[in-house]
Amino acid sequence: MESGFSKDISGILDHFQKNEITEHLIYEKLAEKEKDPHNKEVLGRIAGDELKHYNIIKKITGKEFSPDKRRILWFTTMARVFGLTFTIKLMEKGENRAQSGYSEIKEKFPEISRILADEERHELELADMINEEKLGYMGSVVLGLNDALVELTGALAGFSFALQNTALIGAIGLITGIAAALSMAASEYLSEKADGGGEKDPFRAASYTGAAYILTVFLLILPYFIFGNYAVALAVTIITGIIIIFVFNFYISVAKDLDFKRRFMEMAAISLGVAGLSFVLGAVVKIVFGVDI
Image 1 (cartoon, rainbow, N blue to C red):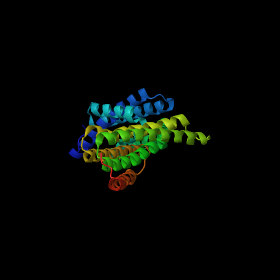
Image 2: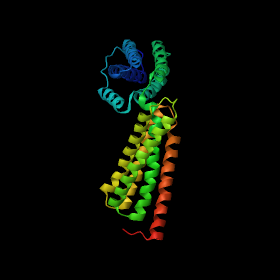
Image 3: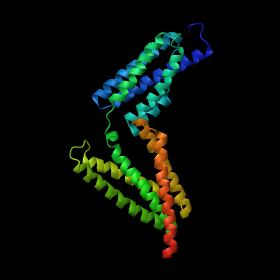
């Protein structure tokens, strides 16, 4: 190792060197699995650049580092589950932090300037290269998921106070949810069909809407088939709804560079507001009509 390093600078260089060889292998594995020729070529080129970065820092430190296998497994799994766009956007955020760190030491090591230039180019390439079907149909997913959260959470809250029987509430909610999912999918199909000049395939748009709706219905209904107390089931359903909203908005905010906090708070407020009003409505119905099951 070159003399004159402070412990802090040595630690930063070690961290960056290990990070570069790890990201080299991540991009290499993503390139191997990518079917789009353009995306595959760009990912392969970036993987090569990361290896160059590793070797540049290696000349400074005189060290060899093994890649972080857990991080490789994490990001390759994320790519399979959530798609390439979401995964590389998360990695891009890490590279933004890396650039900040590189800037602190580039005056001492001019070679680092080359790495900074490559990282800035990577951001532009990564932003332009992605063309995933699921992002093109995200509007359809939002439609299905948002409607299911708002409508079904509200319906379950109303049913809970009016009926106070978890098995009955779950059965009615399931029937209501599936019927609403089919109706929503049909509406999306007809809407896209009418918009003949649109880029989305009507059948696929309807499929994304219906699938998002039915999955949300299943997750919201499930507590009523697990818990015998309607109040506990409703509480778990509301918590589940908030978790769904959190996960979905985190995904979309990363994949499309949107404001997570504002979108999450807005969607959660609407869903909880409708659930609260529906719970009050259920109480009124029970009192006025004397429902007692």
